[in-house]
Image 1 (cartoon, rainbow, N blue to C red):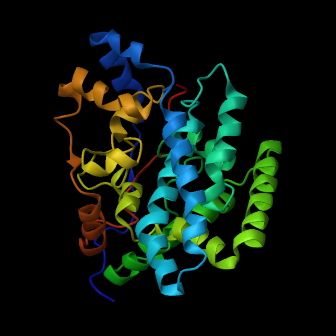
Image 2 (image 1 turned 30 degrees about the vertical axis):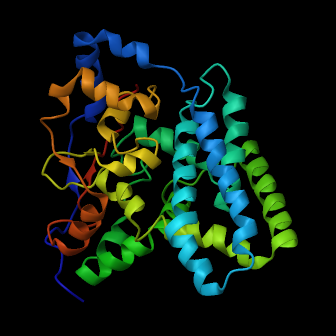
Length: 321
């Protein structure tokens, strides 16, 4: 089973989440960062190109062997679908068309969701914004692993399977920890996705549908681009609960690696987050950071000091900001 993790509980703190206070300090010193707030006019074209690429792949995949289907799903389609999930992350913050056009953001989210195969755009927004506002809250922040996960997957081999099964935890954990009634737009999202999936199966066959869905699931688990799930908030250095990654995979993930910058300034589009770091380097260069998501996955699995317990939790809610 491998080495047992050294932690037996989460890291509990009674301080506020760090980003609201740091945001205030940074803006006092660098008010020009407010000029970066808004939406990215280039975003819709980049995300649309990803969707169209996956649609074109349907014609390629339908005649491939099963071995090639799974290889393409892991190495190509899954990467694009993961990027589209992160496009939905940008859309959750209204960074596609701005806060003044919320329905345009939601409709574009439905479009970006299509190749992913599973309806997630609206549901993700519902929970993700609470992750920002109540980071570390033991009930509200569903990004946190449960006690059951931490106890079951507490060895090297256990952590390997936990990483592989991450997509299942991300899908079902919110429904168990903090269930919410479905919203109308969630139902619309589901119906649109079901119609799209049915058309794909009718026109191209099940092999293509499996390429889309399996690619999405594989690229959320034991996959380099999925390293950001762990790198963002797992405590690799004691007392630090958010970490940025400044490696090349940011190029295909809308700079989600700039995660301290994103939590400090969620109104800044991903394309402009490096500018936040450039303007205020002393706030980011001096805190722990990652340079490789693959290394993050390796260290998480093999280091007994890191595991599902390595998260900072709070009994009280975070700042209303």
